[in-house]
Amino acid sequence: MNMQAPRGTQDLLPGTTESWQYVERKLNDICHRFNYKEIRTPIFEHTELFQRGVGDTTDIVQREMYTFKDRGDRNLTLRPEGTASVVRAFVQNKLFGLPNQPTKVFYFGPMFRYERPQQGRMRQFVQFGVEALGSADPAIDAEVISLAMSCYQELGLRSLKLVINSLGDTESRENHRKALINHFEPHKDELCSDCQVRLDKNPLRILDCKKDRDHPAMQSAPSILDYLNEDSGQYFNKVRHYLDEMGINYIVDKNLVRGLDYYNHTAFEIMSDAEGFGAITTLSGGGRYNGLVEDLGGPETPGIGFALSVERLLMALEAEGINLPTEDVVDCYIIALGEESVTEAVRLTYKLRKAGLQVDKDYQDKKFKAQFKTADRLNTKYVIVLGENELEKNVVNVKDMHSGEQQEVGINELENYLLNELQGGK
Image 1 (tube, helix red, strand yellow):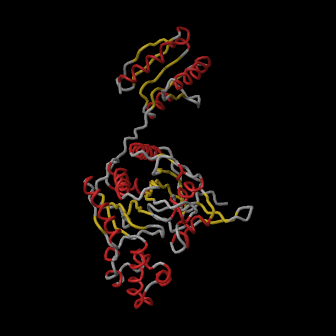
Image 2: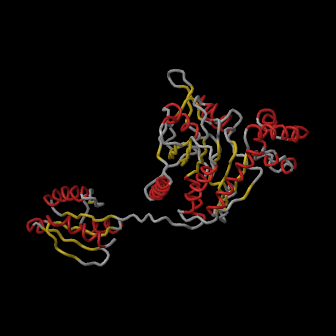
Image 3: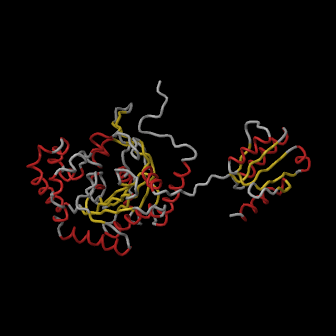
């Protein structure tokens, strides 16, 4: 019997989860300031959602999805990404009918992809994402990009590189598609088997291939920027103008295409240049996906979004030596000696917790000194000592673990005393 965590998954233990919680609070706060609301979707969806929404030619759909049949013989898939689920919820719940548009949402949640586990790439990973549905204004493209950059900058990261590109509208992409086919057709037999299939179905994906990235034909491939029609070119210029106005530095990369079929117009990635971060430098990516809502049964609705891996975000923080302020401290620890004192300690612990304090006590019948050692290991601010003598006088001894000072306080006054002391020390 294998009782280990499945390959590609991990346990996040106390001591580690505090960093995750801090990051989640920070990202939640940023979304609040940008006026994005949280959405929560199911962990599994009908398989067809991802086949239609993500695209049949993507690596995700072809080989990375966890798909199974339920007892009703329905094909279900553990979600490999968040956008398709958000758009499905947008259509199903008719969020397009709400008076305030665009609909701006964010999400946290586990995603699942069957790929070779490596540092920063797990089979179950946590993704944070943002979607803005209902606006074709290039200013919201810039807003989404600025939100993504804020997520990293406000956590202290500095070795960042923003790369952007335009994939154009339908006309621009079709002209570029024809140029790519003409360019790669003479080299078809030299390409990997996946790219040979992509050449007919979606030649743009060839530019995203990891196996053929060093092939000479990749370096001379036609650029989408040379095939943008007037409207697409103006759109991209406006996005760049807004980024310039916000003081956000970027690099235009003509080969940036992203790995999902639904992207058009703006595409972007944020990378880490930190030394020692690893060979895979991408932290997050996203772009515009006009047409996806219609593909999933909704009305014509433009959209844009991005997603980041929390695991890779934490890796980037580690690479830059950034320690998050997650000091774990306990407000007070109650040491009780004697059966009646233990009973009173149970009551006091509950009362102080209800007052908003972080409180703990012994549950292993340890000796007095051992309990003090536990309080010290927990980084406790105040230790409350309650024995038979104290109980008779209806008092407790309060020790300030920082200064070493000790004071006798009435049990009925303890709550106010601790609240005043703790607030004064903040």
